[in-house]
Length: 250
View 1 (tube, rainbow, N blue to C red):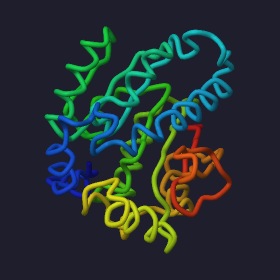
View 2 (cartoon, rainbow, N blue to C red):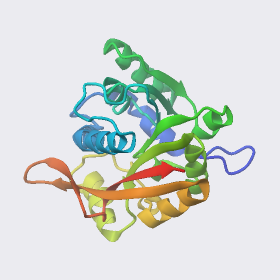
View 3 (cartoon, rainbow, N blue to C red):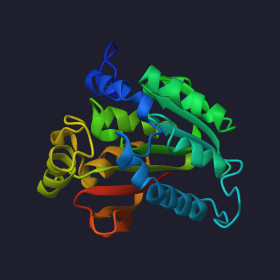
């Protein structure tokens, strides 16, 4: 996706939209091209649940702790996060630049018996409508946009005052180049070659700086690391490759 940099230019990166649209039919194949997302999903869901419950004073042990909260997933893909968020009780909307992604997500949610609103839409266009949400998710999206600052500006405007945003992305470090780009795409073959451009990875400081002018303050940054021996992902203090961010709009 890409953000608006002038009147006629969107923030979505056409190349990235085309790349993920081409793989859309495999979104729900846990052993397919999106296997890495399926692997990190439990960690992402746990992080989101704990932060949201703490912020809104909800009991995370309840069946539907997000009941009454409106949630937007930007760059929702096939709905891998939208569906668990709906099961937690949130009123969920997902937007994505790829029409095929949205079609796959809509079909899967119907088959799963979940009421989720999906739209092929960019955040800047949704923001123009004035709609806001209690929770905005930006998960593994920002490293694919054309203009990070514009994307963050539009995303921030979609958060209600007192609401929250959760983001996840990859740090622009040499370690991330070795593991998340070269290792994941060329050595382990976890991802199709060309999925990521290391130059578009975002440092935590850049992300925080991009949110600050929009009254969105970062409250936590936590790393996400992979254990090859256990073949599992977990939260960590190591921010060198993958990391999660929670932020609050004043």
